[in-house]
Image 1: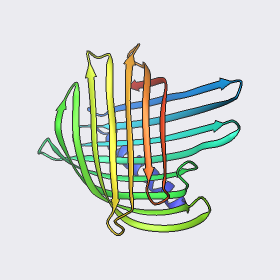
Image 2: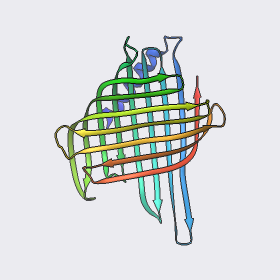
Image 3: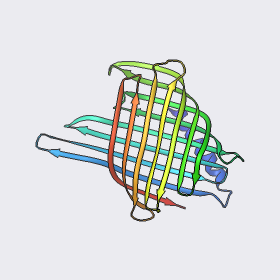
Length: 243
């Protein structure tokens, strides 16, 4: 765990420091808080989903760092206590549509029976569409994964594998008011044919101000090795600031 934190700090420090020497550097900080509460005579449930992101970008390189925390209960029984933190960077080539990426990710999830999981790797990306109001790209690469899982809720599984990671990402802005965006992943093990993970994050935001939006989001996760999945649909607000 200490090595994971150290890696993220080094990447953040290195790329942020590099970016400070350019007048064309742009920064974005973004926070989204969404959730749902249901209370009846028969019981109550609630779910809170918090996401924090930071981005540094310039002409040939960009860095993204983010963290999320999901907590939920249903009739006093814990349903979610899920934490994720990630840092990734993109290196753009002279060919505008092609770029290279690197990723380090750590997560633990009560709902998916993940005690600890680290993923790190790199690959290539291709922009199918890149316009001021529309983005569509695909990426592919290799990830090394080291996991501590629970199988059948009680059997501990210390596990390592190499995965192929394929992603489809999009963002579409309509009249500078409505924003549709999402990242959808399929990651299959190259060592075990029945081991794969699916992660889909999609949202729609309506801008009330340049820095404030109403947001509805849907997140789906499936971890085939633990035979667990979750589907989160919630709504709330997003705050973002460019500087």
